[in-house]
Length: 475
Ligand code: LFR
Image (cartoon, rainbow, N blue to C red; front, side, top):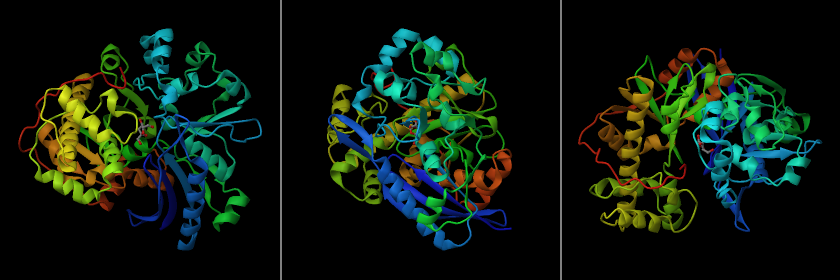
């Protein structure tokens, strides 16, 4: 039996509309429409062009409609950001970007008021300055008073597609006001901050059917009889669903704008040790937990390349020819905000650590990739220690899995075998949950293995020298 589904993956630097065809136990993914995404700076703040994204989604759907009968569509995106709707369903705000300066100092204030133990024991979520908890704490009270419903970014798109205003567990967990043990909102945290919990939508499981496209959307896109089915709406959860792993003893790195380094556990692990290590317990599919940590990822290179404007393939090829040299702490607070001075920030970090300063784009890129590999290796060791789960194989999935140099450096720095692919992990996870539901994760992953080309890297030279730790964005 053949079934066709559409996945919409909204990432921080680009968006994609893809058509997935499941046939004979294999999934074929075809990208129908790609479009750029990024922050829009206005008066010292940073926003998403949410309506521009919606226009691109409609355009992609219309292109997908030309490919024959389609069963369903589902949207995933980056986490933590949201829109507020009034009682008529109208959007009250332009959606804020999680890297906006409006959040400066907010997490510190909330943590001082509520205590780290109270926040972490209720949620198991790592402290990141942009978690939805702090974003709501930064909202003006009069603005919150006018709001009727909070919808996370993918939820907004589902609402516009089919009229159903709900959320899904994986992305709900990223807010830092979701309790993974009860599966419900951690309302007491919001009460303590005077944020009305009545804003929060119902939480559904991935695989839930939200109903047909609205008639006006069907009209605009030429898609008839298509249903909206919830994928794991957090992009990282969809990517982890598509990790082509078998058995135990593996970890994943979802490699893109961020490097999300983690393991899958049957239960959340929330204790003094995971708090001290600032590990997160985000929800995965089928009741699993994604015990992971955010590492700054390719963001640093992406921001540098906004200035350099080089071809990425060429840049990474040149970086591979440069010898390893200085290492920076990629999780330093200095790298979180956007800015054309990113190359200089890398140089400043090297200088501050008393290391040689890289100059050319290839040298700077090499420094960042080597440093990311070392940081990922540190996190893998931490995950092994806190969980007691041995990690022998590291699955690198997502766009960053195409960078052979980075995969090899992760193998070298961690002393573990790396398996790279699929590149389109997020789209794959999204599509397979729509097609197969979320319950049989092993079956889902065997389709991924049958459908993907994977590359293996074995550890060679050791690259595990430590680097100079700086104050991180999460401290
Ligand atoms: C990756 C991701 C991460 C989340 C960050 C911000 O795209 O979703 O999982 O921590 O973006 O939302």
